Image 1 (cartoon, rainbow, N blue to C red):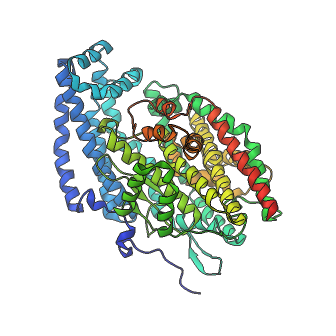
Image 2: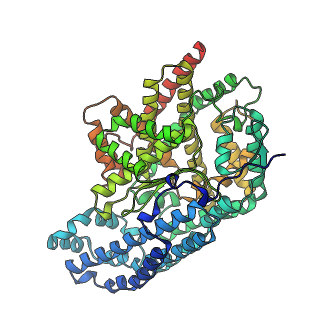
Image 3: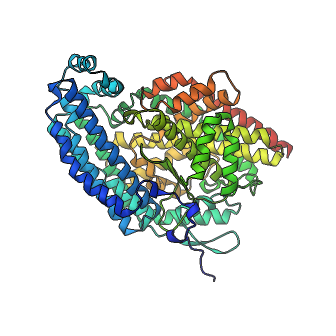
Length: 603
């Protein structure tokens, strides 16, 4: 038996395929110097405590001091986080990341007095300061948002206690991340040619696209055999994380963890409920697509590990990273020259960390701080799916670039509610480009299949996750123990509801909750679904060349936090307080499904 193929070590990678973090800190020693200097600055900001009643100039000085502290802190945090992610088994960067978490807690505690003290002022006093000091005007939206949360901000002492416990509150998520990314050891399985393959997170995703069912089954069962061994540990970390959310919501006088999570961006809870309701109404569309998949695969039994392999066999198109770079540039041309220049800069200046290496964090993301490039982490393997992932993450990074270039630091980021709209608009535009340029029926059918799978994974699957996430928070609030058995039973039934009667009830899928990092992100996943639906509407307008559509879209990308997310999207042309945008997305899914069925009959 030949030696199994091993992932390269970090130091073995070509520099051109790695992100350039030296633009943040030239060396780790330079980071340590900044860290030491920053520690000395933390007490300085506390000198402003108790001065907000002294007038507009003191009020302004306090705002600027706290923002300056967080701005520098974010840069250091991003550096250590990305250094750790590029090799989670590297103890040096584990230590730096852990130390950084402690510094974040200290800094958060040092500025935790600001909101409670400001809220001791009346609204009239605060706005009088704005009349007195013109330099405060830039902070109007920030202050407006804070005053709106008056009922949920605690006393200075209570806020300090909560901030000081920040590192403790994050323990469950940190434990999950280390266990999931660094400590779990997956088995070696046989690949398509009988070769031994070391299973990993990245390899698993690739093998789920294999055209050989025995390879998919081996990867599926091999992966979940490991999670089964640790199911009780994962149930404990997830339950602990949920308890933190519910506890913090309770002490801040919110009716629920969901209400607390959505309040920061002024998102009505009805947006969440409407999503679940509309998706449930359209589950027959998913059942129809799943049944079609079973028919086309010609199998007596359709399993959950059959959901990602191309229905039409081997992919007729596959892109290397170099080819994907060029395709990304061409496909995104409808977004205009200004957008294209940022994309070019991303590829030219090493914003992207491309390939998987030993210990590297799984998946893909876009990250960065106000004063850094908006970096992209990938775990590349040649496929159409990875092209979509690259385009998706580029959407995030260009959004970040435009926001930071057009907004002051105070509004220089954006809510996660808005984030997924930029990334999935890119995906929709890529689909339109491919369908407009590919004439081969097999290729078109494959692209349509990819789109339908993407919709399934983004709208249906993420709504399933959102429904599960809300359920476990509600059950914990009621005092229900979130045991592994309880979580698995509910998840198995929910999965069966979503995918319908055509899919076998594989027992392994009941444990899927144990490996989803987004369940630690506090009501994050629903925004994938709402974002995809909104992006569907925006992309259609942009590609069609509708008057003002591109200008409105670019304005959204540059808006940051300068207004509430719902209002920013209304200006971009989508009202997300209504069900219409989700219904419209479902119509696109149904139209593409009709087209796919008709095309298949012609092959």
